Image (cartoon, rainbow, N blue to C red; front, side, top):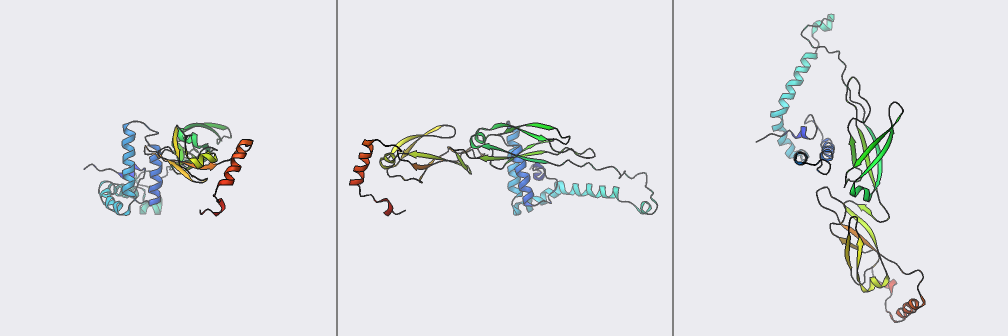
Amino acid sequence: MIFKDYYKILGLETNKVTIDEIKNAFREQAKKYHPDVNGGSQAEERFKDINEAYRILSNNSSKRKYDRVWYSHVGKRLDREKQKEEREVKPDLLTLLFGIVKSNKKETNKKIPIKGENVETEITIDVEQAFYGSNKKIQLRAIDGKMKTFNIKVPAGIRNGEKIRLIGQGKRGQNGGKTGDLFIKVNIENTKQYRLHGYDIYTDLWLAPWEAVLGTRVTIDTIDDTANVYIPQGIRSGEKIRIKQKGYKDGKGGRGDLIAEIKIVVPKNPSEEELELYQKIKEITKFEPRKQQT
């Protein structure tokens, strides 16, 4: 059986990590190697390994079992390397007393490379831009005080609050250390037409009183198409009609639903004939709205 280093797959160097650290590492790797962002079979295989690693390591029971196998393949070697490094840098008695360093000791006065700090910022896009994906430009002030422009490619179907990572666009490292990264948090705002709730998209469906009373069929605009919807007799304002698989992308090849919320509106300037008909309805109806049970 081929051994897979799940910690390495998630970008972790040791098994001495918390569940929160595992979750954070999973989110970062899944976003980096998601098939929607990286095409090709290699990206799909890497994404499967990432999901498999998270499934095993996020469960305490399966993690304990896996750690025993991991230690025999990886942990022992890491322990030996660590002990070797400690022996090489540990000063002996002569060094402590007289400052004498043996010729076979490695130099320990080299400066340690330090990675630069990450930089975080935010952008705001609307529901439709998030659904289709979009390109955004942002400007940030660099260390030298000059403004630098970044082109941000927002992948289609990004979730509200997700972060896009630009590697090496953060602050400079020290002593030859790597440059930090730039993280852009994406905030999705609702529009007049569409409101995002999880994977579902909400919209308003406006009906005339007679449409609500008699029932009808209407065509409604979805975020990427149209749908024919049947309106049953006697529907009320506030009731909802669910249109399957017409909502937001769920990241697994599926879609949420489109939820059409009923809003019944009356004509602002009815004609004389319309007023007469409404008056006639008033005279013959037994409907008492304020006595209706909710």
